[in-house]
Image 1 (cartoon, rainbow, N blue to C red):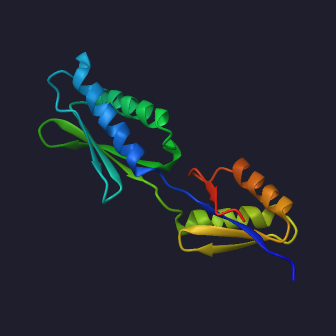
Image 2 (cartoon, rainbow, N blue to C red):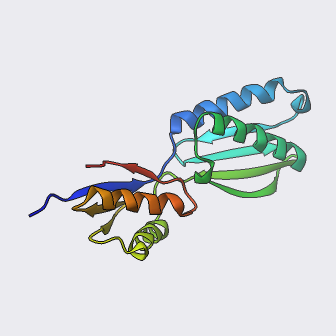
Length: 166
């Protein structure tokens, strides 16, 4: 029997890099003139995989998200993996926004990944959804490379990572 080659498709964010970006953003907010005397904060809830932004107004919320985005991009955190909530009024004349971090493939995205590979009709390539990842296997490494190309060309709403290539 021929040896079966495979790789795993996953997604996620480096929590330490998110923490570093939040700390850098808070430092910049503390030094910027347009945030002097404001109640603007960025809170990183690691356990809930969520960022909570609080600002005095919609304008400051926009500036706050711009600062955070810049720091996240510089630290290499994929902003596609951030699910931005609505800006809602909070207590004390402030506005609040919750940003959820996508750290694993959900079932819908995993099904879309598997369907994209099946639609490409690459011979002898098989997919298997395993919890929060998709395993792609084939006897031919070239076919696996083609499958990676198909996935890189598609837009699945999250940043895809390819690992465990053997």
